[in-house]
Image 1 (cartoon, rainbow, N blue to C red):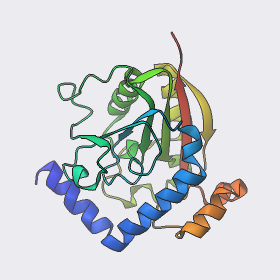
Image 2: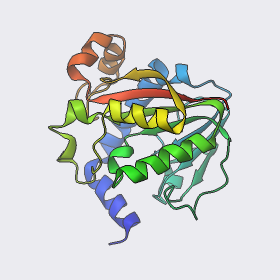
Image 3: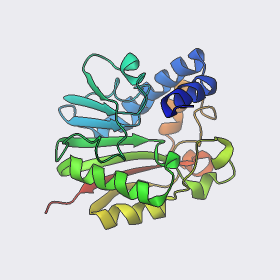
Image 4: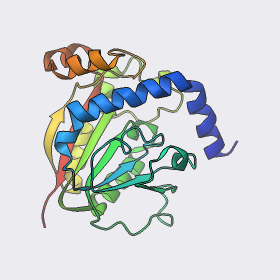
Length: 224
């Protein structure tokens, strides 16, 4: 089975149409209540691996670009979103994105990589693609706090903690501005499952220490 066919079947089985719609609504709350404050509305934003466009369609930004391997991404993207269907790990596929973006957003992507070398490649690509003082924003399962459920998804491969990601970011040349080791619950299928509950959850950070299985990281590219 080809990779793109496998991806389509996998995610079609994982989320039905009702769940997809619910995810879009939850993303809207997450953006409005938390993420948007880290993204200036005139900035150029790149979303890596956000295939169903829940983030890139709803974030307020001056320019929007999505990189995803799934060709169906174009079906979900709003007209203002530039979609590039490439394998970001394939050097031959990469377009010239040097110092083009103010923000790069990556959510639930790193755990699908096969090894640490691929993670280094992605972080290095992000560093090169960001403008000076640009930032990478990451929402990512934290193996330290989700190890029991981490491999319940067949496509999860690389275990990452907030400490290992922080070390890599600093090694590549980023300065970590915000590090929240426990932020969102591990899965969108878990708590909180409604827009109202999510809104309340985001306003009560003490709950994150009990329910958070994913980290949030903001790291900025240091000026040369």
